[in-house]
Length: 258
Image (cartoon, rainbow, N blue to C red):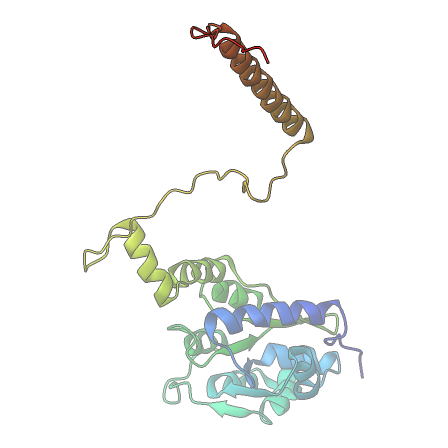
């Protein structure tokens, strides 16, 4: 059997990234539905690729491989060149395409199966380049093909990326509490309640936690000493300025001689 790249390699990491995109934006879930046509089965037969085993490993899980009545009929009509692909297709399930009475060609049937938004979340496996080009214009369709015995899952188209971006921008990511606070702040509160918020001003240092400087304390002590000396000088000056009162003895008593 030919060696096919799986999840352990570079292509496996790419397939994880592409599948996670479709899971997040287009609700793809495991097991994946893979819709194959005759061209993909013919390439798998030439490259000796087991579709159920190796495609399942590449996509990282169980898969449901299916085809349509129109695809089987076209492979049978093309004759012996696609007899091997026809035998492989007969092993898979047949999904109803609605063209049993008036069969279409395989490409038209495959495009009709994913039209209208790819409700069944099909991964289209085909080697038809024209069909892949047509399906890129439809959003939400992963495309799988083989190249040199290697499986490739195409990157999402620009249309799919645009739809994913629009849906992401429309998402309401705010919680109920954030909505209420936003209404009050913008003045769109239906109850008419407005929140008046005080502006924060820069606060100074806590005076209790600040230590006084020694130089300031020394200067204060000097001022106190000066005040004390000045008050003592003033008291002295007031005492000296008062007039001296002399006591005059008017009545003299004679001393009797003994």
